[in-house]
Image (cartoon, rainbow over all chains, first blue to last red; front, side, top):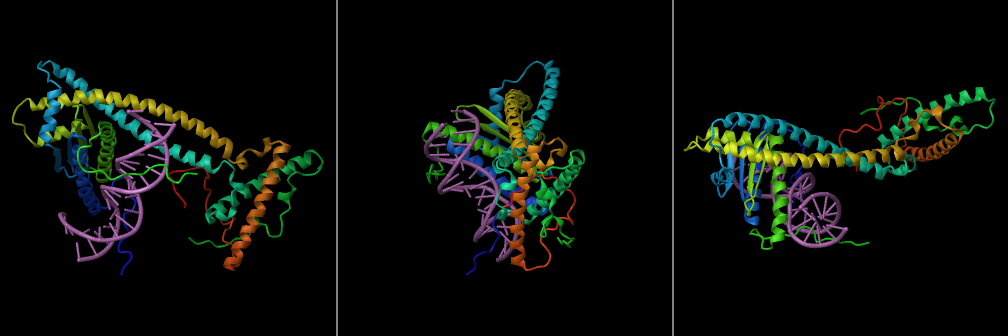
Length: 199
Length: 199
DNA sequence: CAATCTATAGTTAGCTC
DNA sequence: CGAGCTAACTATAGATT
């Protein structure tokens, strides 16, 4: 009685799959996945759907409900063709503009994605950091986060010491507001001796 | 505190959706779902994908990576048409696509503006709430601010000590798990590339 | 390769605003 | 409409046959 035979579906980055074999498999699987979605859209909504796919190797695949020809013909029907041969110039221009537009659109799209991603991160930050990291429960911090924090405090410590010296020199020392930091208690975690770290 | 606000996704029969409103909604949602799948197939496998959809009402939609024209041109090239006017299909579709693209582009543009605006606000929030007081130039801090800072550090210090004791006890090791001296190079605490969820 | 399997990532039906 | 939410439902990565 096995409990686990596979790792189940794994998350993959949205970028060209490096391994050729995997890429081919995915191409095949997902292509039929899209066909299925297309046919579902067709039956659920009474729409006509056509899908055209060219593999990287240039091989053509297609799916059509009711058929690719029907779909493409419909496009023709709804957009009467030009009869005048002088339209070629116009068409050429149109092509140029279209390509340009397409490029712009794609760029904008990716920028938009990036922006959305940034926003996600920002939102997370806002909700996480509304109190400031030093107020968060230490117990839930990871080792890495503790290390980062220690580094930050160490830097700050130096800053403050420096500033303290400045002030002491200038105004012959009353009570220093940050004496806490300057005390260097016996178990100060920020003045530890070197320790070998392995990763 | 409610536990259930929705019924979640329900299973539906694979047949034409009776209710017109639902059908329209599903048409819209699933169409964009297919577009997404198509673009994913394209990026994952380096393929060219085109999707043509005609709603029941006859309205045309399309999606193409890199562009629907490229796809349809390829089809025409690889499948010599029986009659001449098939070539017009490409042009016809191009026109249609141009209009659609223009519309989409404009929409995207305004969305982008909105997104940027939101981001601006978020950034402001982030920098105000959590930018990290330790990074600000010490010299410009007032005495009052220094006092506040000292208090915060004191608190944090206790926290860290406590945490360190915990760890020391648990792992009875002579070396502390977090060495501040032997740190890896300056990791910018605010630089983010990918969303890396910790837990 | 195509077919299966499994656990999990991703999509979406039904609602709400 | 469109955007957002939640709970389910579905697709699929990785492994096996």
